[in-house]
Image (cartoon, rainbow, N blue to C red; front, side, top):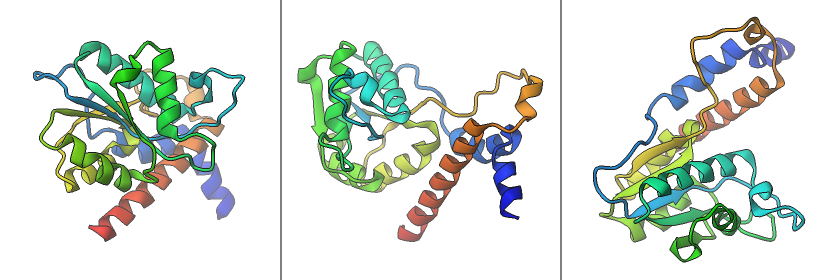
Length: 207
């Protein structure tokens, strides 16, 4: 039984069927009709290695969120940027590491505010909300994580504009034969999807 479930989890059609409903709730951010006050980048992860540039120290989720935020900042240079996330056992907070990477990518340091202590999505919403209430806010996080993040920010009074970053499921209607073969990447995708589903179940019980 366990072997069968593991094998199914590696199959792209199965993995995509689990992940896609999490990611299909929000469209790509284009441009706000109103000036943007804040771009909020939710925390991901990193590993501090001084020999690497800050961009190389971010994990894939943090880096993709940052890249999306940089794109949005180019559209709305009037905005301030808030980075978020605790250290998670590292010597630097994720908020600070993302700020360092953002500066490397050309964003002005004086426009970046760090929230160094939130340890999960709800804490991020709770701590950031007082600063951004009644402002035009763009919320950046991974596409699969966006519904839960938006719900927490709404809980604390923030009606943000969603900016989902780097969806796992990318369907261009071309299906090569390799799509039906087991994939280690799709196993990771399935694991991320189930982790997020569990997070949403916890959120439902707490609401």
